[in-house]
Every structure is written in structure tokens, then in C-alpha cells.
Image (tube, rainbow, N blue to C red):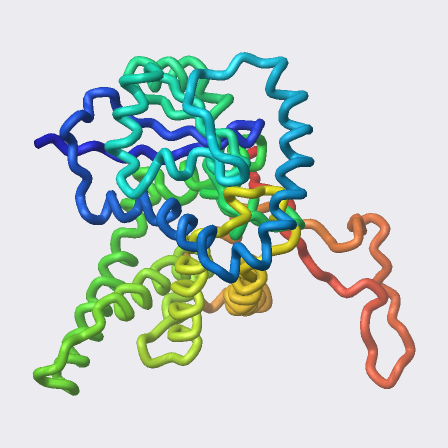
Amino acid sequence: MSTLPVYPYVQTPDFVYIYVIPGRATSAKLSQDSHHKLIIDILSMERFLFSPVSLAAGAAVLLLFFLINRICQSKSTNVRRLPPGPRGWPIIGNILDIGPHPHKNLVLLQRKYGPLIWLRLGLVNTVVIASAQSAMEMFKNHDQHFCNRHRNATMIRDDGSHNGTIGLSDYGPQWKMMRRLYATEMFTKKRLDDTTHLRRKCLDQLIQWVSDEAKHNPGKSIEVARFIYAAIFNMIGDLAFSKDDLAHPEFNVTNVFFNTTADIIELMALPNVSDFFPILRPFDLQGLKKRTEDKEKIVRKIIGTFVEERRRRGVNPNHFHEKDLLESFEWSLEKGIIPETLNMDEKIRLTLRRANPLKLIPMRCKLI
């Protein structure tokens, strides 16, 4: 029995999600982890839609939104050609056609409708690419139109801050800048060779932590993930801030950062009704976005503390350190002040301070 590979689905500029399903998957079986990852959104969505609380509280509102959305979509859908596909139910679309075994049902739909299938998951238009030839045509010859990664409603921020992460950023100048920064400043062969001793030091530290934990708690299981996380955090801190003691398994800040990051990942993976009904995104009915943003504030505060400490420390002439990530950016004065117009006159107060205190702000990577 062959294994059906699961490809990531991406998002087009028209918010059409793309699933890539190979055509020769008649008797294929998914591994337990891949199968769970593929159907968790569908199954959880079915439970949410058919729970008594959801039906009683949201049926009227969803019906109204559906009618408005249907009228708007009918005007735009009729003017463009769509692939064939089964007719969907009102409101929920083709969610039931996918069922609890999407890898099998999509193969059956492929036999009936061909390599391109149009579905509607809730109110979201979905195109299933069910052959290797179609996938090659789309992602080889039209890759720029489908290069953006799918982001669920929990990941998107109103202020656009999600674009600060290369994994969530839209394809464009900022994404190219971040990719170039990684490629030229962090992951080049020379850079990796020069930082081998840093990775070795973090690995030795990790082994020492695990060894000490085993000695202090003989016969008990060890949560290795916590130690690995602290070691990786120190390695990144050394590369970015020239500081290798940011984290320790016993530090409170390490545990807070570890637990908060784990909570963010878990919240982003939970099924969100807004992913199937985008018109409900402003309401955040499940509160997932609000809870995730609160967790992110904690993470940003911790990282901001490290960055500010590194800026205050500056370049210590008595301590040699290798070039770190912060030195790869150009810096400017705040409020658009330029050095030529900088006012350094003293203000008469109880304490003397400059009229324009120096404060640097990162602008862009020097590589651009």
C-alpha cells in the first residue's frame, strides 16, 4: 500500500485555497499523524456546526450573512470559468462531501470530475488539484500567483504585524529582504562554519543540563523538550544578540517563553469558524485571535527586553564578540531626525538631558 503525500495548501490573491492531491491514490493510506493533520479542521468544523449551541445561536445570523455573500459571489463567479465540482449545501457548502476520510473522498471526486475540482468549504472557494501534471503546471509555470502561504484567521493581524515573520509574510519586497537576510547573514556556508563553536557550546550545555537532571532525579522521566528549547534559544541569542546565557531550564523567563510559545502554536492550530466563513472574522466568535494576541504580547516583551539590553550594551571595547544579527541593519534616529539638524542643547531642569536624546531605530537590512 502506498502512502499518500500531503502537500501544503496555499492561498491565491482571491482567497482560494489549493489542495494538491496526487491522482494515483486509489488505495493509499495516510499515516496516523498526516491523516489527523489533514482532517482535524473538517471534523472539528462538523462538530462545531452541528452542536445545539451553535445551531441555536448562529443559524439566523449565518443565514443572513450567507444570503448577502451569495448575492455578491454570484455576480463575481458568473463572469469567470470555474472547474467542475459537486453542488454544495447552503451555508456549509461541500464540507459533508469531504467527510471524515478526505483522502478517499477526494479520489472519488477526481474520478468523476477530473484533475481540477471546485469545492466550497463553508463560504470559501476551494480548488482541488488532483493530478501531478496539473500540480506541475500550476506551481512551476504559475508559481508567483500561488506562492503565498495559507494563513488562518488566528494568524492574521489587523496592523499587518504578521508580515514580520517570513513564514506568514506575503510574497513581495519585504519577504525577499527577509529571505536575503537569512541567506546571506545567517545560513551561508562561511557563517555556519564560523559559528560551529557556538552550536557545539550549546550542545555541550544541553548534554550537561540533561545529565544534571538525571542525577538530581534518578529513576524519573526527563522532559527533554524543555532543555532543547533552552539550548536553541541560547544559540539564537548568541547569533542575534551576542549573548549566550539568555535561557536556562530553571530560569522563570525561559519557562514563560517556552509555555507561551507552545500556547500560541496550539491556538493557531485550533479550527476556527472564521476560516470557513470569512465574513465572521471581525467578530472572532471563538476568541482565538484575542487569546493569541495576548500571548504574543508576552513574547514580544521578552524579546524586546533582550534587544534593548543589546542596544544599551553597544560595542564593549573590552570584550570581543563576533558580528551579530542586529549589526546587519541600518539604523536611523526616531521621528525622522537627521544628524545635521540634531539639537543637542541642554534643557534646564533638575537634571540635564539632551533636547533630542539619541535613540536608534532599525530601518532595513544593509543588503538591499
